Length: 393
Ligand SMILES: *Cc1c(COP(=O)(O)O)cnc(C)c1O
Image (cartoon, rainbow, N blue to C red; front, side, top):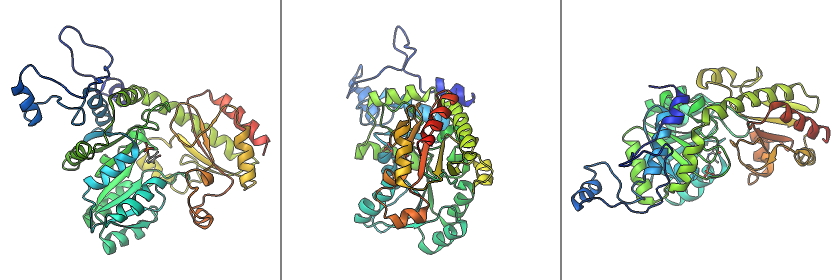
C-alpha cells in the first residue's frame, strides 16, 4: 500500500469516460443514472453489478470521497453523510442502539452528541449513562454493570485535549460485548486510525480538518462489516446523504490533509511552547507538553500531539477572555476548528454554553479558558498576534 500522503492525493479517482479521463473528479450533479439497457439497470438496482442508479443510493463524486476516506483509514467501508451529526446518528443506529438498549458515553463528548443521546435517543427508549473516559476502572465497572450496546467516546476531548486510551478501552469493551464508537474528528486518520486500535466504528465531522477550509459541512463514518454495510443502508434509508458538490469540496480538501496537518501540528506545538512560558498564561493544555496528564497515552495512540490546544489566562475571568479575543487581528474568532486559518474560541460561552456554571467548573472549563485550532499561517505572525492580544489582558 502506498504511503498516507500519496493515498491522500490519489485515492478516490475513478470513472474514466469513453474518450478521455478527467484528472480531477467531476461533480456528478445528477439525481439519476441511465444505462444502455434496462437489464443493466435491473442488475445495478439488485446489487448484482456495480454502478449507479439513484443518487441517494450512490453517486460517483460521493463514492470518490468515501473511497478516499477508507483509503486513509486503511480499512473498513466509509460512508459519507451530510454532516458530522448525521454520521454520529447513523453510527449509533448501525451499532444496534434502539428501543430498550443502553449507551455508555464519555462525559467529555461534543455537546450536540450528548444532546442527541439525552433528547432524541432517550425519547426512543434508549438510556444513556455518562462516564469519565479517563478512568478505566469506572469504564470497566459500567461495561459490566450497565451492559451497554455501545460505548461512545472521542479520541481527544474538547476543549482540554484529554487523550482516550482507545486500545485499552476497546479491549475492555470487547470482553463486555459492547461496540466501540470513536469520534476521531480532532485527530483525523493522519494522527490516529481507531479501527487499528480496536474501535468498531469511526466517526468524522469532515466539516473540520478533513475538508479543512471552512467551506463545507460534511461527515463520514467508517467500519468493517457488518457495521459498514449497516451504515450504508442507513444513509440510503434515513437519507442523510452528502450532496455531490459537498463531496467534491470535501475530496478536494482531503488531498492536502497531510500538508495541512503537518504545518498545523508544528504551529500548535510552537504556540503551546510559547504560551507555556508566558506570564499572563497560567496553564496550557496540549498533549505534546511534558505536564499533560495523558502524555504517555498520547505517545502510544497518536502519531503527533495534534493541531488543537487550549490555555488558561492567569486572570481567570470572562472579561479578560473577551478582551483577549477582541484584540486578535489575525486569528479568527469562530466556533469551529480544523480550518487553514487559526481559530480562537471561548468554550464557556460557545461549545459549553448550555452547561450550568457548576458543571463547567467540574469539567474544568474555566472562564479564562481559550481554545486555539492552529492554521497553516507563518508561526511568527501567529505568535505576534497572540502576543498583541495578551498585552490587552
Ligand atoms: C463539529 C463536531 C461534530 C459535529 O459535526 P457537524 O459537521 O457540525 O455536524 C461532531 N463531533 C465533533 C468532535 C465535532 O468537533
